[in-house]
Image (tube, rainbow, N blue to C red; front, side):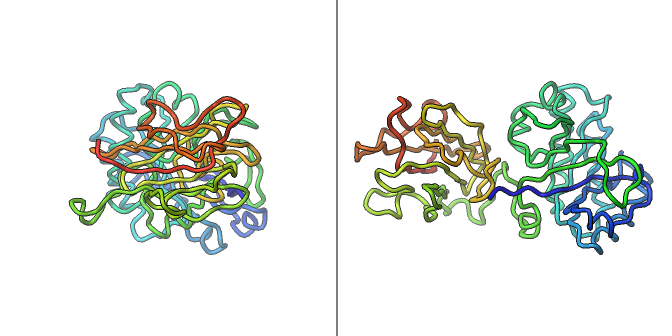
Length: 355
């Protein structure tokens, strides 16, 4: 079952908050404004109290920092101040870099500022994500940045055409018991409390190894055939520990990850279309942790390895009725499978190799 957690984000503009009533109204998490800008005096005056009382009432807590930075050096200063405000506190949700100010409406500014802030805060041990509006992502933020960091999307609508976000701020005029006036409403589609607690490295960035000279990169993957089959690492052609799937049985979902870089992947459904790229690894998150759709048979698949320096991904698929694998495919130059409305993929193999 897909994860969908109900949340809010607040600042001093919400005034005095009765967090007991907020919890009773079904709110599971809250993103608190910690502050803004690059000086310590710009800490949000309600942050400490909101943090303490939200925690006391069993609400999962994250934070965000509003940015005015227009250069990398300014963004790093903002991150340092943000870290000083966060110091000594424990978070269940990420820290979000709030990039939306009118002074930042430039691709050059976005490309300089966003990595400078997020990477600085990450280096201090905080799981950090990117917040902005749909129009900002579409007009000013490069695809490579969107691929690199988790996205908290702001788009006030009943549905959104934007794909790949982990959190969605879908309203700025919500009503929640315990809060006077309007409040932003959010959905979260991943299990951030488990990720942050485990200090799991942010999806989309290179996973360091303790000894990169001796460690062999590998892919880990699973498939859904009506149930999730066992986890596979690496490949071979002699037993079921070397491939994911069951001969002559269709696959409806795939989840995969790499020990280096970021592995993104997508699938084509029979008599359907290519579904959006995903980059998570999950057996429950059908939004960004699984490529596929319940009840729809997969007949094509692509993998792409990002931010992995000298490594790339190769993969291949077995088609029902053939009892053999199609040729290996590297990256997105081609795809594995046969899209003809009749066949389907019944087994896959993935390997991480040097370029």
